[in-house]
View 1 (cartoon, rainbow, N blue to C red):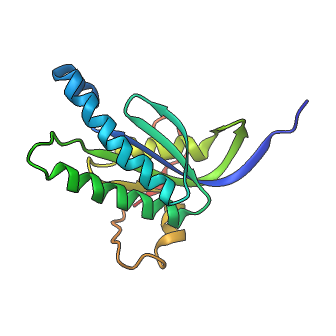
View 2 (cartoon, rainbow, N blue to C red):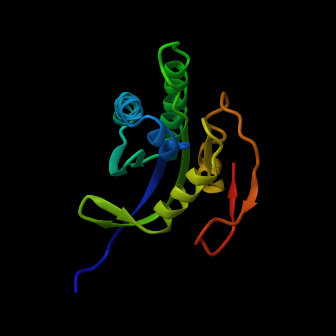
Amino acid sequence: MLAIQRKLAAILAADIYQFSKQMGEDETGTLANLRACRQIVDGIIAEHHGRIFGTAGDSVVAEFASAVSAVLCAVECQRAIAQRNAQSDVKPLLFRIGINIGDVIVEGDNLYGDGVNVAARLEAIAAPGSICVSAKVYEEVRRKMADISFVDGGAQKLKNIEDPVAIY
């Protein structure tokens, strides 16, 4: 039996708010918008030394060696998408982003475990156009990112996660 390989990673999970609804209204236009936004987001992830290890439809999941890098990446992504959305000829797409740091299982190019699952659940509760981070991430970045404000969201019960997770 092979030993399970583990590592600590900061996980960023992002998707587009109401993507399915927009696809139902205009598949071709929404897909073109998605491609343009993914080009922006994928480039920013690479600039911050992230590695995309999962995509499906409108979602992207990436790993970072640093919580600071993950949060800086998320902030830059939201700012870049907001600038794109401000253009008069663009139908806006709003991303929700969740970030967690935790122990993950490595299997080939993929990652598994609560570190990933919690990030995905944080993304699901993030407000459109915003970022939701776990308390673990907040503790790692709060003193290093004085120009970013955090709002305490309290302990939240997340779908299929046993213990409540404190969020910001």
